[in-house]
Image 1 (cartoon, one colour):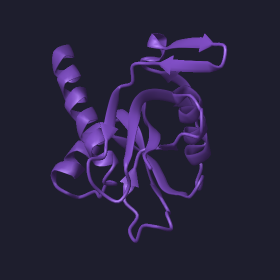
Image 2 (cartoon, one colour):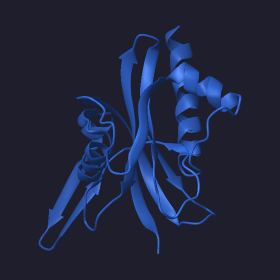
Image 3 (cartoon, rainbow, N blue to C red):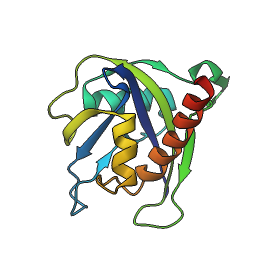
Image 4 (cartoon, one colour):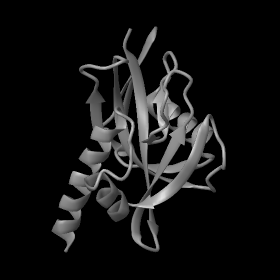
Amino acid sequence: MIYVNVRAIIERNGPNGTEIVIQKRVKSNENKTPYELPGGRLEEFESFMEGLKREVHEETGLHITKIFGEETRIETNDVDSNVEAIKPFAVYQTTNGPVDSLGAYFRCQASGNLVKEGDGTMDIKWIPVDELHHSLEKDLIDFSWVDKSGIMYYLKWYYAEKQQID
């Protein structure tokens, strides 16, 4: 069975530049608790947008206010079917590992305050992108095997964009 997931890269401008939300989640099937991005599995026939908003709120307490790429969304409806097409920030597919999954990463902005404990969430926080980059380079932070490639993809994009602006 293959699972379809949505993941949120929630950004804000903080005192030390751009920050994103990372969290740890207690999972009964894992013996360690690495950091990960908010998000999770879509429910049957749940749209990307609905699932992303639901997962972010359940895990963080935040309400998504903007999804970059949402303006590309197209929905087609037929007598007995609906299909959504949208341009995410990035997609991933596991090609080996304990779970067969594919998913989409969306860059977002959100309002509200982070909860202390959400849907199995702990140690949820805003982290400056530069600190995250440094921590990954020095192997000071443990990220989930699914989200590590998504974070690395985001950092590559972020620093390329930043270089174009400077």
